[in-house]
Length: 353
Image (cartoon, rainbow, N blue to C red):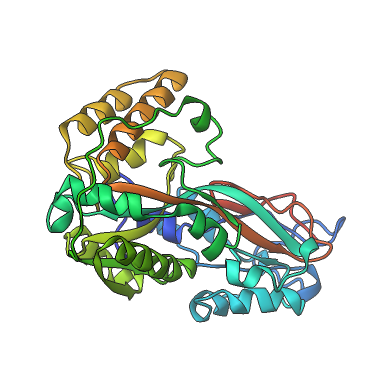
């Protein structure tokens, strides 16, 4: 997963690999920060089990994100721990102080006082390919949307550690709920009549294959014939962007690198968007996104983003499924862990044990 960073608009790879900011952290109150390059021994190091390897090239924080000399990072877990079991085990056995992004399936194995749950700006959505294949039909897209039971995903797959999809922006985007505009003019659903569709997702995030499996069942119950494809993201992205799948389950940080709500709309949902997996090309959507991009005032920009969100959802090319919460494992005695809804910062100058 070492594709070049986009030059114009953010793409999933940044959100998928973006490592937490790891700077200035130290152990034991009064001991002071361990000097860079100095071996202070295991007793003076804060041990962190990361979900993804550090990727300086993809981080807006530059070199800070990969200065790990002050941390005893359990780096083996980043490549050997696809389902998060090792991270949770390391926390339980005392082999790590912080476990990043503990999967839902492992959350119940941790003591309640070691779990920290944070609403994030990450939304998992079903993207329907409106550029080619069966979902060029607005009626079939409407039928697929109507078939999806988001509460079953939030309560079942995520075991209550997620919120049912309300829009592109979830509860962690605090200003979105009050100003949200409901979509209008949606197409009427048509009967699928065993229309064959290919649904794809990736297994780098442990819950997504199960989400896709539940969606497969829901769509088949509604009358679709569904083929499921699950691969590592690095083996899936090019096919997804080329429109080789009819539907795609994607977990996307909706505020990406900058915190700007318009960036993800432009990159993911416009005709010229660089990460438009749904292959959506709609003149009203493009107009609404362009208006949002041209609005400088913060409040008005947010309102414009919500108006554009309504236009996008009205096409039924995007079906928000759940808004994720991240579970962080924090060992006894560890203080000052940064619980960031953007999933960018985990350890800071005040983090210690």
